[in-house]
Amino acid sequence: MGCYLMPKIEEILKKAGDFKGINRDEAIELMHLELDSRETYALMQTANQMSREQFNNKGENHFHIGINIDPCPFNCRFCSLTQKAGIFKKKIDFSFEDILDWAKIAAENSSDALNIMTTGTYPLNRLAEIGKRLKKQVDIPMVANTRDLNHKEGEKLLDAGFVGAYHALRLGEGKDTPFGPEKRIRTIQILKDVGLRWMNCVEPVGPEHKAEEIVDLMLLARKFNATYSGVMRRINFPGSPMQRYGMISEREMSRMVAVSRLVMGDIPKAHCTHEPHSVSLTAGANLFFPEVGSNPRDGADQIDGGRGKSILITRKIQQEMDWDPSLPSNCFNVP
Ligand code: SF4
Image (cartoon, rainbow, N blue to C red; front, side):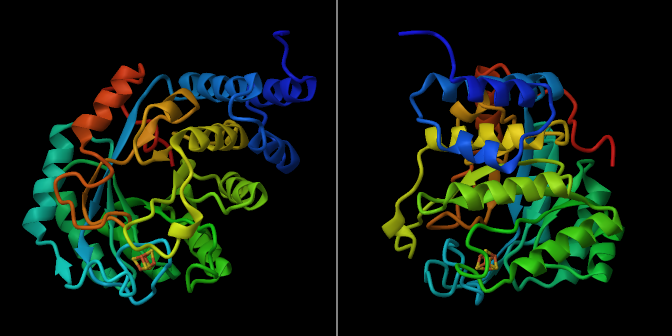
């Protein structure tokens, strides 16, 4: 057996490793590499090297707090917090004291950011109010994860102390969700216009998604200069309408994490994956989201850690893979 790579792949990896980005066709070609091939390992090695160098070996932890549960009438098909899923029957707004306690846990464990998530109908004023109150008591950059926004609402979040917003044009948007892709992109542009950092992930990936549609979302993240944009797979909660498609494995996800890292070139400040696992930390990922409160993948509210694992565990996984969570974050020092 020879030890050379396919010349075309070698050429793409060389260009990518020089932080020049790769084009759509090249990314699609990488998405189709055999998982067990030497080329896939070379792809992951390239992504790993880029991230270790660009992020200075920093392991990032952005602490997710899902601040409410409300059976959501938008019924996105991959989400467990919907009316249709019938898993969460009653509305819960976690108290400010609960939210503050979680934020303090994040602070005590050197979390790099708070990601404050709401369901689709949560009042924006209330989110802004919680942001204002949290900002007075904990010193961690706050990122909002909420519905589509207009310009005024974006400014409101900024005034409340948020420095960024997570917002994703989802795979299957408009088909598995009631939201038009244009609306998502409009919100992303608004975030940029008002001065909020835009955080993104290509999600929720399932086996039914074509390489082309996945790569198009990676390219969108590069086009709009996402602070980070890795890959999250879809988790099929019990009774999920997506169960018939199955789920991708963490190993498959790590190949995509690597492709998205190459696509992002020298743009990102971090590279995320979800849920936390080791293999993507060898493929360019350095950012995890430990979770408390609600999240759209659990079968029940797991307020002590949820599927996304607690921050002690995410830090430990990073340390085992030689990423250092105690270094300062790269995500918030420049706009
Ligand atoms: S993803 Fe958001 S908007 Fe869609 S159903 Fe879940 S909570 Fe509602």
